[in-house]
Image (cartoon, rainbow, N blue to C red):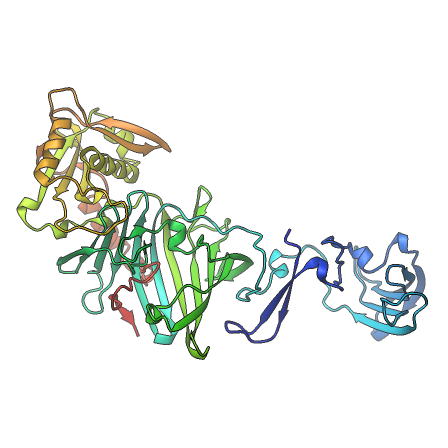
Length: 561
């Protein structure tokens, strides 16, 4: 219990049509339902009606054709030296528990409550009319300030949800000032220290996005155009997923930091439940002073105040095709940012604006590795090597892969990378095929080390050259000294292991034969695509979008204007 009073006034502030004042409950001199150290009075005590008040039944009156019961109570409040008669009127036709429809108070009170002895007294007469009386429990949101109203000093009484460590999101960013809507996708793999984006270009086909991959193991950013052209550079210090302490080296933001949910300068306060996008959601709000919109970043002469409101879906709701709540973590449904920029020295308002981030199809868990694929950056034949090896056990595929594809592939990629000391970004195009030469077979492409260096904090060694990396794998799988490659993955929420079959590593491209493999076959996929074309056209809609816009340079994604 926070023991606070929020007084909301219809006076405009920078961000809403209301202002709010927060005070301590014990500092209020008058509260309708009591101010005794935060203890709420019962309805009987509030209305001074019940057996202990010795009320007297006066009779019935009939205003406007209604039958009203009239009761009278004489009250003396010793602490305040106030004496009054209390006349309560109840609807005689109301069945069950009820409240008065009208109350009259006539009495006397000291003119100055701090005067001792027998101070001068004054008469008072109060009339209370109770309209639209509703008996029963109330929804909790009526006890919170209106959503969108900032109450400075308010104590948070409900923690904001934790963000999962691995997730994918489609996001729509609406910027009313610019009359534009931006779309892209984000894939966040905190455990592997990799972030990827897909952003639609201003011109070109809608199914050919620009892709950006940030590998925080090495500090390298890969930017791949729709035509496959690749640029490799150090991850920019100003990237939204990066944090830097020296304006030179970068580290990957934690999931909470990416959403600014656990930053030390941000105090998130629960605003209650409301309805957004026709769904029941819980809202958290904060006032921020260290964030700036893109057009003001880097300008030290501009100060920006902003309010951020996150909306999280209620526990009773779920999202088809995605996930929202898992292991007490959640991804938001919406973010609203309102900001106002002032000139530092004069306080003059420079401009103001608003951004709405709508998050669609949030997914928690291992992200499909192909979203982090940078093989387009390795176009020469000596920069990549197609490889394959078998798995031990004839039932390995049916037992561990068929219904556990995402976790199995994620684990195999990480195990391969760890075994030879490279980033997982160098393991590309991994597929698992069943029944090829009577065993489950893993096909993948091993990429060479990047030819540039990044500026990541505690950067790991990018690993050996391609030939050396291949030799290390040969020693593990094809070696004669008893060594083996152990592959770890999650199965039924437990770490499980399988071995690569000895002496099976070879240079081989995935065969074009009819086999069982992870994912849909071409025929099945085509059938589904044709069968769902109409539905897909109706609901695929806004496509992709990003958590925070990739603003290190001019906005690269397509725009609706």
